[in-house]
Every structure is written in structure tokens, then in C-alpha cells.
Image (cartoon, rainbow, N blue to C red):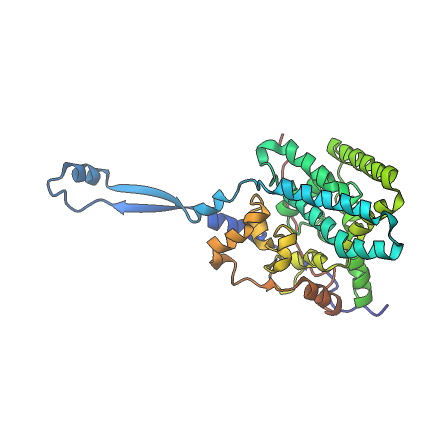
Length: 355
């Protein structure tokens, strides 16, 4: 399968992630002092103002950004539409030949299921109902999980918070490949295989890198998912179940939309660990391409992320960005400098558990 070339280790840094400082700068409050007038001119109000000497004003640099930190009221309806679309597809594929079933699983189901996983991503940030209604967000994520075929939503939320808190953190951020992946998948053919098997690596990596105790919500997620799979099998047979599973494996594997997995944090340019993509595929991926903006403000739902760039273009327009997720995959496979090792890593102090 070829000889290994390129990187032999991760890009180790000893600085904090850039999103923390940028967020602080954009939301910080500035002090403005107005000097007292030089003379009162016989005006008692000005005399009083002079006695005060200074008036201090507080103003946020970008107050409009905080206004974007609100739930997306359309998210639940979009999720409902996507789930119903896949249920209709399950009914339609009952009598299809296997080759056509797999074709539609890639061409249509892969797009829908990938979109649903990104809806789950948005919901994991409480984007549907807000932080005050966490339970509603969790159950909407379980509902969005149904067409995926395997329980995913509850486990994703459990680990995704660490990806934001400890970006690139050694042993903490399970989005970063393991050393075994970096060593093994280092040629074009092997990297192509690695991309095709992304769903398996994303599922198994947390168990190796940072295993956590199974939660009650994960058990409920699994029970609901198994019940849904069993109901579809009982109603329509094996093919719809295979269609859903194939949609997930193919849609999250070697698929144009899956370019975002690589585009987001793999180091295409030294010194940059997060990249945005502003192209049309954002329309079906809940604006996950606005990834620098998302890491700067995780509490802003995907529908509002384009407004962050519009409000503060001086923070984003100069940053390197991707223009095509397909080209990202192409370059990742063929460039020696790119591969599972092309990630920024840092040693992070584990945050204290809050009671």
C-alpha cells in the first residue's frame, strides 16, 4: 500500500487555544472617561458635573454578538422534516434491488443522515430550546438520532464538550486521532481507507483515548434506538434497516459532506488549527462550515453564525479558509504533509469537576 512519508508526530504547541482570546477580545467591556468641563458658565448642572470630575461609561466591543446567543426556533421543525423524509425513504426502498438501495443510501440518505448528525451537534449546544430546557434538547437529539440507526446522540454530547474546552488536549479531545492512526494511515491508499472508515474511528476512539462511565441518558438513547430499529424491521423488513445503516456509514465516510471532518481542524497551514468554509454545503449542514466562529462562540446556533462574521469581519476575513470540502479530501489523501498526524496538540490541565 506504499511507503509512509510526511509527518511522524503531531504539531505540539504550548499555548492556549486561540478561540479563548478572540472571544475575550470581542466581548470585553471598554472603559470610556469623559473629562469634566473647564468652566461652569453659571450653569448649576455643569457645576455639579464638574464636581463629579469624570463620568465612566462601560460598553461592549460587539454587543450585537451576545444577542445571537439565543435558541433557533426552526431547528426542531427542520429535524422533524429530516426524520420524516428518512421514514418515507424507508418505505420506498422496501422493494428496491440492493444495488439501487446502496446508491440511494449514498446519494440521498447519506446527505440526510449526515445532516441529522450535525443537527445533533447543534442540539448538544442547547441550540433548540436553550440552556434552561436541557431535557428537551436531549430528547430532541434522541429523536434526531432515529434514522442514524445506532445510538449516538447522548455519547456525542458527553465527549463534545471536551472538544471545545480542551481543543487538541492530549488524552482529552477525542476528535484528535490516536498515534496508531497517525502511524498506520500515512500513505494515499491508507488515508483513503481511513476516510472511508471515519464512522468507526469516531465511535471507537473515545473508548481508547478518554473512556467515561456510561450515563443514564446513553442507556435510554440505546433503548429508544433499538426499539425504533425493531419497529422498522417489523413493519417493512430488512432492507429499510440496511438502508438507514448504509446511509450513516456511507454518508459519514468517503462522502463530499464528510470533508468538514478534515477541514475543521487539520493543519493545512502551520500555526492555524481551526478553519472555516463559507460555501453552499453550509445550507444542508447547519452552517458547520463556520467553524472558527463556532469555536469562538459555541452557544450561538448555526443559523446565526454567518452574522458573527458579518458583525466582526476584521476578526475572520483575513484567516485562511477552505473553499471546497471535496478539494480538502483530495489534498488530504495526496499531500504528504497531511494525514492523521496533521493536528495541533497541547497538554491541558483537567478542569475541576463542578459539584
